[in-house]
Length: 520
Image 1 (spheres, one colour):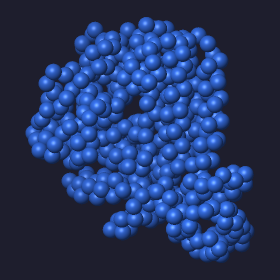
Image 2 (tube, one colour; image 1 turned 90 degrees about the vertical axis):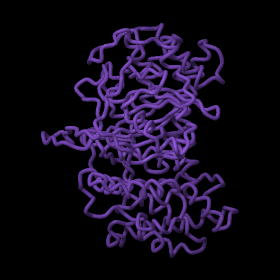
Image 3 (spheres, rainbow, N blue to C red; image 1 turned 135 degrees about the vertical axis):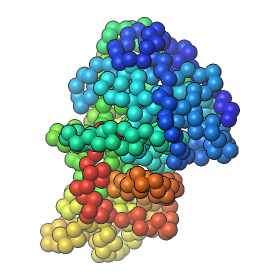
Image 4 (cartoon, rainbow, N blue to C red; image 1 turned 60 degrees about the vertical axis):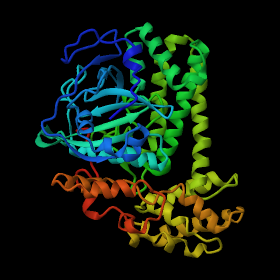
């Protein structure tokens, strides 16, 4: 197995001079060298062959003992030095101080086909940043991360990727719901892949400590490798850098809202400097359309990270990044201008995205009201967001009376669609039909465009839980089935039709299907 390794982060930036792997505060350093914990009996469960190909790996590499050893943490790849990153962050709106890679160990960087990839193992053992944790991960959370990161990529959502999913052979003690009922679960390791795993929190750490030298070095490094088009280091470049990060973050958020994805724990240490979805913990997809929904039990009371609040939280997180970068520029006005523009751009881009979901290409002044009226209708009775938009694509102009029957399968309680609820829906379909008369696309052309934006299949929590339940019994067939299906989420794929269905009633309040914690 020959990888074209080309490390930069741990070659060009400041290391922790203390080589002891014990939990501590780390100063004047961007990372600490660590070696993954050797698993007792590693077993490969699944590999993303597409991701392997992106790294220059062949099928025989993936099936080799060396692959198993390297990506389970049993062996360090030749001429590389694994490390854990130092960063800080705001968690649920509160400053948390130093955090860092508590259960992620960065292996190396690979350059292939002129693309740079950083690879890290999640669940491969403790680091100086593990705090009270053990640095390990369980099969439950690892299956969810592995499946979701690849599924998000195929949905067209900016995301980190996954290469492999392995069992460690060790049992890991976890209190799944933080209620005092700890139990042993199967340990697992995911190899995560991204151009970089640098987060907002990396910058916050040095700003909070007034370590301007390392803050500048980190910013220059990030621009050099990931925003080279911005030019040589200068105040102007740093302002352009913040604008570029803001634009990428907004793009990611628009995609989340488009597919109904709720991240669940949008702390600043979980925000990628590249605008990628990162850290798949207590995430979920909207089933019933609901602006107030969050899958995270930890956030149940205040719902800070609810679906409808994600655009605002991204803005708040960008403000924290601006505060960190301020010391390099010492001017507030450029940051204020960019953050104000984010709000304007969100309104514009969200409206454009919603037009696309409804198959509208022409811009009309009444579109905002049409969309708001639709959102009101979706809230009248529990309505499955994914199924609704997918079925809506089959709407034919001039047949507004057929609208309700067309989307009937999206309702969780069809018996509630009567009287005033029914009237409101009919009024909306009449308005939608009238609006479609302005469009030049044929019904067939519109359906194709809508189906390319509104997925038929998403990784609903209950689906992931079914795969986890089987995997815990040694049966990985459902992981493979879902993995294959989610590679083509916009295709009809009639062989997977059973997954184009509302959440079953048994999953409504089942742990892992409706409620999730950060425990992994």
